[in-house]
Amino acid sequence: MKIKTFTTLLVLLACCGSAKAEEIKVLTQNIWGVPDSVSVRTGGPSIQTRKVQFCNRLKSLPESPDIVMVQEVWNIDDALYMIKNCGYSYSSYQDGEHFNTILNSSSQKLTSNFFEAVKQQIDDALSYFGTNIDDLLTGAVCLSYTSGVCNMLEEVGIIPDRSKLLQATSWFKDSYVKSGLLILSKRPIVSQYRMIYSSRGDLDKLLNDLERSVTKSLLLVKVALPNGSYLWVANTHLISDHEYKPNERDHYSTQRITQFAEALSFIKNMVGTEPVIFGGDFNMGDTYPCWDTVKSVFVRSGIQGDLDEQATYDGRYNKYANGNEGKLDHILGINGVTAEEESLAFVNNPVSDHYGIFKTFSVPTN
Image 1 (cartoon, rainbow, N blue to C red):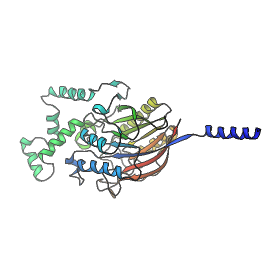
Image 2: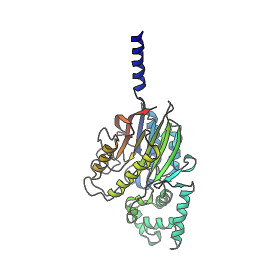
Image 3: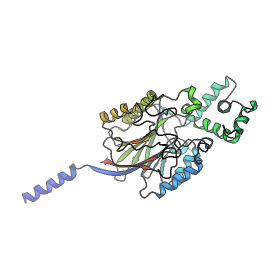
């Protein structure tokens, strides 16, 4: 009797002491949501075509991801299409009914009218000079149609036609305060936050890298798992140096490291010790000088990084990319979240100038 009781006790201790885990499959994809005047001229299909391909291919995967993190969804119509057609019941985007709370890097709560307020402030400031956003951007993109310069450049194919120029101008205005971040989920999203990074692109590089024309951010959501526990998911798109060549000087290295540090700090303050999956387009990898600094943070903080170093932006294989810059996209495990498998997505049928990353995680639960 005593032996049976002791054996039963050991079994109970073993069961109670063993950590439970939930398997979660995650995909991150930079969708390259630039105006068609950019993507088509560089040899890629329009975003209208690629967003349809993206949703169709997501639904055709043998094992569809539980969570999808998308970057560069600058246009709300593109976001709404993915929300309605990619096969996911829950979503988080920064506009309209799909977003509740916005936080900046100082944890200051902002109103739902923030985006329109910023646009109005810009127009008010420009009115002093007798112009507005539309006029300024049209002039910046193409000087002036009245000078005849645009007509000449249009004829030789250096710039898009007038209708596409207007489309690009509208895109600039619409995207100025946007993050371009979207999260799709099979599980309910119970809360959602946006943190705006304190640093932005250089104003004098506005037309070169477009970084000043958008507002890079972190999108953080809390997802309810089937067993009653929760998982936090953080999606981001860090600043990009469009002139960067592998293993050379990185113009935005300091800003990118600052953004990454702000992201980790914000996540830590919001989630405490709860499990987190953090990913997106970091715009840095093993060919970037700042990557060693980032990896040292992983070691000190117990963050699990990549399982491999396959390039996600590589012109040798991806017809939309213009060069090999290595692995720019990553998905990390924080607070005990560990990766079991990792692979590239959409390699043979790319939907962007980036490949996607498909990763399976083991998430500790209560």
